[in-house]
Length: 300
Ligand code: COD
Image (cartoon, rainbow, N blue to C red):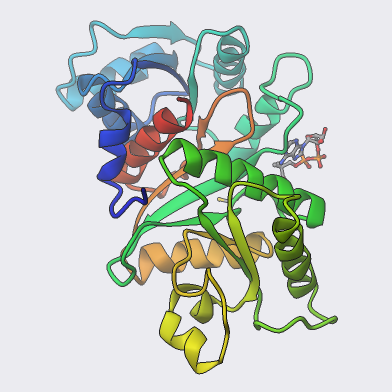
C-alpha cells in the first residue's frame, strides 16, 4: 500500500486505541486548534502542560470546551517542556508535541541523559508531502534535525524512515538518495554516500526497502526524465522516500514545496522513545493536525 493523500492517515489511525499526547508549552492557538480537533475525533487524549490561564483563555476565545482535558499548570516555558518530557519519560505519554517553544529548547530536553527520551537510536525528522504534481504522497528526510549526516547517520535516518513507512502500510518503499547529479563524482560526497547506500541495500545491509542513488531530483520523481538520461532504476520516477544530503538542501526543498507548490505536509521526529510532533511556529493548523495523525500512526 502507498498513501495517495494525507487524508489516508485518518484511515490508518481509525480504530486504533487512543494515544496519550503530552503537549509542551501548550499555550499556542494553532497547536491547541489541532490538538482539540484530534481529541474530538478520538485520535488522542491530550495532556496540556503550560500556563493554565493562557491555555484556558485561548480555548474560551475559540469556544473550545476543554473541561475533560488534563492541564498541568507550569507557567515557565523551560520548566513546562521539562515537565512534559519527564511525563513521557515516565511512561505517561505515547506522543510528545511541541507548543509555544523554540525547537532547540525542546530538543535539548528530549536529549537529556537523565530524563530525556533517548533510545540509543539517532533521532531524525521525517516529513510527508502531498503535492498535486506527484501521483502519491512523497516522504522526505531529514529536513530539520540532523545537520550534515555522515554515512552512518544516513543509514540510521533511512532505517527510522523505513520503519515509519512500514507502520503506515508500505512494503519495500523505494528510496532515492539525492545528489546534484546521477553519476558518482568523487568531489561530491553526497554521490559517494548514495552509491554506498545503494550497494549496502543490494547486499541486505540495509533492509526492507529498495535504495537507488545517486539520483538527481528530476530523475527521482520523473520517469520521463530518467529515461531521457538513460538511467535504469527501479526507484526513478516512483520514489516513496527522498533522502537529503544535508539540512540545507532538505529545508529549502521543504519550504519550496510548501510555499511554491502549496504542498500539504505532515512531519514527525522519529527515533526517540515516542514520536514527537515538532512542527514549526509558521506551520498551519492543518499541518499540525496532519502531523498529529502521522505521529499517532507512527506510535502503533
Ligand atoms: N539523535 C540522537 N542523539 C543526538 C542527536 C540526534 N539526532 N543529535 C545530538 N544528539 C546527542 C549527542 O549524541 C550528544 O549526546 C548530545 O545529544 C548533544 O550533542 P551535540 O552537542 O552534537 O548536539 P547539539 O545540542 O549541539 O545539537 C543537537 C541539535 C538537534 C540541537 C542540532 O543537531 C541542531 O541544531 N539541529 C538542527 C535543528 C534546527 O535548527 N532545525 C531547524 C529546522 S526548522
